[in-house]
Image 1 (cartoon, rainbow, N blue to C red):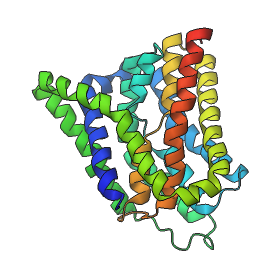
Image 2 (image 1 turned 90 degrees about the vertical axis):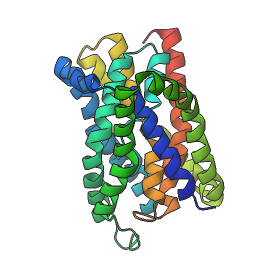
Image 3 (image 1 turned 180 degrees about the horizontal axis):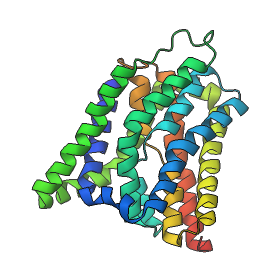
Image 4 (image 1 turned 120 degrees about the vertical axis):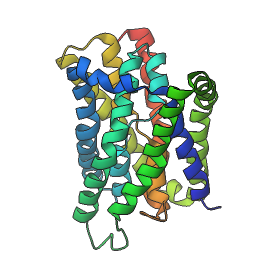
Length: 285
């Protein structure tokens, strides 16, 4: 089975569903709450790739897996983070705004960081890894930015219809992501089986370290409890579907091995963040 046939429609639907949840007002939150927004974006856009870089070197990841780990760290926030913020009784409006901004900003930061990553890893081991930046920009615009814009326009023009569609797609988002991860898991079972301990460890470390750093940042800057919960979730929850699409795209990396860290991440982020939500209910963090 050609995995691209699955990943493209799923990613497009997830981005369209995200667009249905957004309003232009969501982009104005950075003017009303600049400190909180900048903390969240700094953690997601800057700190997360740095944490992934350190962990990739510390775990001595093979080059293809290293690229995959950096790819997930450079991806925008996942649309499911809004649902997790709601479950955690966090600031849902903040979650939506951070997801919206990260989806736009990473259109430009992701190609930049990934281009530096590919140029600076061991070229002897990565002779077949090339990053056509133009293709990456075009694919992100078509599969991520455009569906978001269409969703926002539909909500603006036909709000009732958009609400009904969003309710349906909202229920499908998590199963679709798991379906995508499951298909790639089956296709790459042998490689995942041989490297699961290593990749499971580094991906779990990425989740735990990034959410811990987010929590510490929130405490240092004395954010309210609801805002703190959302910052932790937003920094810990990335768009795994987007990372898988870039890794497997015949126009970009065209390498399913690079997608493996994102596949494992898609599974582990739900375990870690659901555990966080559970801890919140008992410990009132």
